[in-house]
Length: 497
Ligand code: RVP
Image (cartoon, rainbow, N blue to C red; front, side):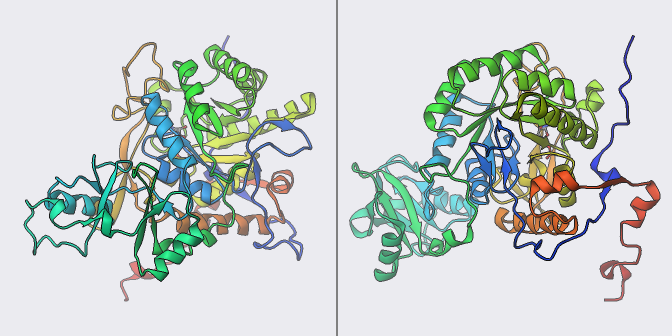
């Protein structure tokens, strides 16, 4: 007979935290947001510690190399998606690992034989006004010159004219080898009054551009997540179909952590794939999931998972619960799995971190997830709103929105994640939509971090371990939920201004 599990399936909206006593030395400045990423002996540090407890969803609409770079610079970790050929994912891993602060990959590139009209369109699309002219029009072609918005204007120059007629040829463009230090490049930018210094390899192929405006950039990111060689860390999603080919290539490219990406990870396929990965690459952390209960957590932990993602059906773009009737309220799932993780630690001496994945709509939901026991969170909708996410930015009457679509939507065609017994999707488990545009990730995440730190201070917790151990939660009634919101007419709607 079917079994009815205890308790109701609850979401974050149904809980609030009670303030705890705050000591004088517990302030936002002293709050520590470091979180273990991978399995470790209880009481000892994790081999990789996130410096802020955020990871980006393994989704086409979220985790571009740009986003992974921006997030690693904030101390979190981006997971690049796997729903594409291995070599494309490898190229993105390399782009993050090769990132050097202040040295950017050129995203506005043309051939000398392209037209000025094409160049103008490209500049409008990327929002950048310096273009590299290379023999093949790519960011790694042989550098033939530079062309900037100072060199031509669509009203002044014929759109059909060629880039070669307006570009500054390479023999007149100051440039450097790629081994130049950022401080030296900056000195040249100032001394030679340059806006941009391209760097090239021994055969003259473009490597990076250094801009004067990036001069102070590095000081903005004191909590970067880097490996032993000071390169930014990056993660990658993998699936249970082609992991034997994909994992070796990702490891070769320098990936820092892998995550088996499945909407339902409680399966023999995932256990087999985890066992294979740990046997062949014991030194590379590999996560599993997604799960929503203790039994599934223990199953994947026993199979060797180094961290486990929690969440089925709670994602903002997810319709799995509507379509298949499976899932669990995210708060209940996190509370149950966190208890299982602690029991596993007590029984085995191994601490296997858990990640709350999906369904975080408000910043305070992140604080709740962490208080309920998540070691770190994974977010899709949240990151899809920023400039660095790959979705197009679309104007509306009231501002801008960004495209955001689920991996279970027809648009994503991710049959590896949403396996329905064959190649291709027979029905959708995700939607294709828009999220409000939120500008630069650095600014947006700073506000979220400020709120989480403020919550932790109110709860008297100076670090995430203490936050979990001492959090006191209360369920809210519908009436008290109403009371949480402003009950006066806010200024903009009062019609007085
Ligand atoms: P959210 O942050 O609420 O946007 O949720 C993101 C999560 O939703 C992903 O990390 C993944 O677990 C899940 N997802 C991705 N695509 C879909 C879908 O199409 N159903 N769901």
